[in-house]
Length: 236
Image 1 (cartoon, rainbow, N blue to C red):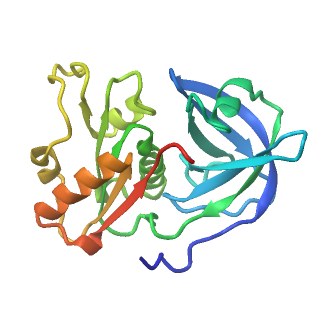
Image 2 (cartoon, rainbow, N blue to C red):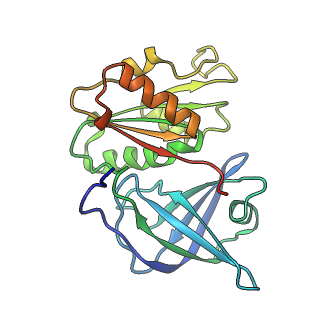
Image 3 (cartoon, rainbow, N blue to C red):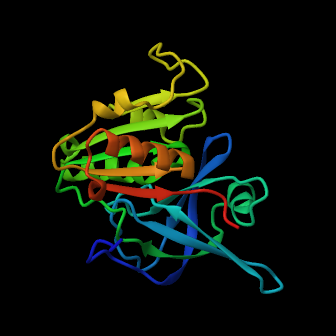
């Protein structure tokens, strides 16, 4: 598909890790000072590259959670047990360390805050949706954005409280929700309540979640060209 034209893009830079927070048992947020950075759009991502002493390099892409108005770039990293990059970022990195980063990147899965949007995400796929939420708050476009997210448990959902406070529908598949809702998957009935005329639908999550959710939206009458999908998962 043709990406959105005019999306900003940046080259490689040496960023400094300013803050680290462990939001979930297997995830960490990194707040980076990026010199001469180019402001990003909600939904874009950065590439992080690690280089070993022998010269071997490995790189992975991570969605940006912060709004462009934030002086720092915030990334969320989910630890993959046998990964080449995420275990180091989640367990070994310390404030003051430097990272090679490239971004912002991407023009298809972006929201500028000037038209209706529906964000539907699973697990760590909520990160670009959080960026959209934060952008909506800054620009006064909260009424244009509707959200629904899914996770196995509340503790495993990144930015859980922030999303819930914003009115996002939260489906937990392995436990009862805080409001007493029984464990459930994000079903067609919940998606149907989010439908808005002329909206763009942003679906982000694992391959299975993305496929199922995008198909349900189309079955509910959403035009295929109004659904934008971003899948995540282990590399290699």
